[in-house]
Image (cartoon, rainbow, N blue to C red; front, side):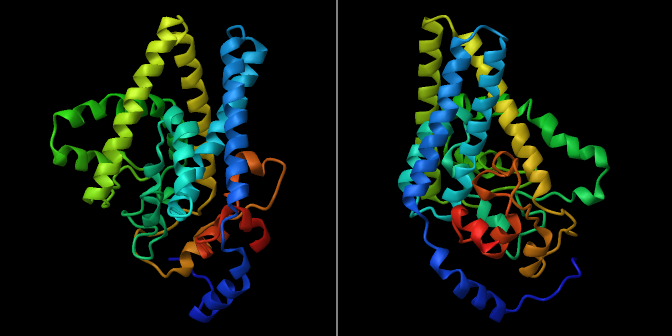
Length: 307
């Protein structure tokens, strides 16, 4: 338990009143940022495909593309906090980023558990590990997992949905509970398995699977499937690794796995002020993480001002 000062209900009311003019998402900024990020990521990807194998141009293009897709995946976080207002944006996200990274928009549905007063910092929190109680070498585990994750995600999106055509609802429910969330805690199970949720996941998975194999067939026809697959694997490894380094830096990870006061989400979280590397390390202002846990309803473009 963190031994920190007390944040009262009056403090929260005052904070909400002070930031009320910043609560509304700026839809123009969201769309501009998403489309610009998509343009950078996909342009660099096409440059990588068109360049000579392992040439400096290709290597640089792969890195730039990876950074673009890494930032793009962070829109899942925004969509999870503003699902109704960003519904149209979530469709565009799936088209430009979700299908390529195989992190579809519903993977953020579990994020609410990370902000739950009853679940934050406990074993029911999908995005929390008590790193302070583990051997320091364990912090390398997420980075190592970055090399395996693209292969597992390919199986999850391009192979497993085929079973939906034969298996019953129980199988789909198990997939949603165990393999459809962005997690740091490997034991996490997503409890959101109502019929509406299951139907949405099933439909999106089947579309993603069909488009994955269609793209593979086209690339195979032009005899560039292997090179394209290696470039995609490289971009996803880099993007996942950037994500793992960011995740290690946004919390203190010293919870005792028991429910704690809401204010401890703020004291356990870390904000890193603007630096030259902040847009890369913490895209969409995710470097202001303590502000986010204090006022989770704020859109990303308000974080700097509130900080």
